[in-house]
Image (tube, rainbow, N blue to C red; front, side):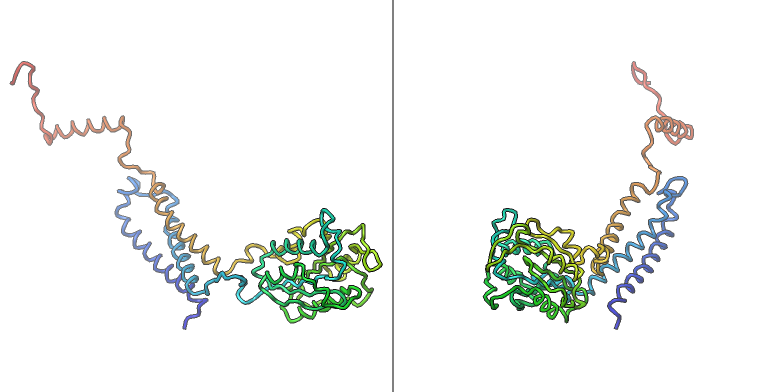
Length: 358
């Protein structure tokens, strides 16, 4: 049985051989009519020499493209399906659900709750990434950490989590332990493919110990820490002042070799999203598959085959029979008539007098 990867090449090679033989046979047949077609010189324009090789290559490209498209697995565009078949990238969200996230000092107007601002930032993030190629996991963190959902392809589930779901009641009251959330995220992401996961931590910050940072597994490819809440003016909760602890969040980002973004007033820049998710490292040509190359081969081959006859008709030769100027036609026609009359091939009739017949 022929290898599916080799079959299109064999089809293209066979088409190349047959096309070359056909062009050679065609060249021999029209050689006798060269003077009639191309004028007294019997030579076309200089570029016409490349027409036959171009036509043969176009036929081979078209044959390869069609054979490839016929043999590869078709692409299915279903909801939630990845563009790479069964392979997915991951977004791992560590979400702070502590009571301080309910304080209203966030957003451009300083009237949103921190959790509502986190929802806006995350919705904007998911709207600007190709969500069909990702599976999303959410880890809630407060006085401990709990995975809420793991590897979901249904963004509505994530949207529901980002709503007013009171997840803080799933924990005992206490201090926010961001390291517990990071440790749980590392455990969830451990079995995934290397550098296939974007870790996203959204919090208003908290004190963290100088040591004990959880070690991230090889599956973590990018880390983005997003702060919410007013970083300058705090609000009291549980007998203490709470505000966005930017210095702590920056420290976490530095220790995880990630990036910090203050999302209190501005959305995450698109360039930063591309950098963290790894999209900026992919050149456009690196994303092309055999399917795209086959489509380009079909388009190029069919387009060239359709264009060559038009070019040959209008620009194949400078000889234009029957397009002589009138000043050049009259003397030639008169000389030809006199020559025929002298040979008595065209009879001449005597003129009749004006007064009557002769």
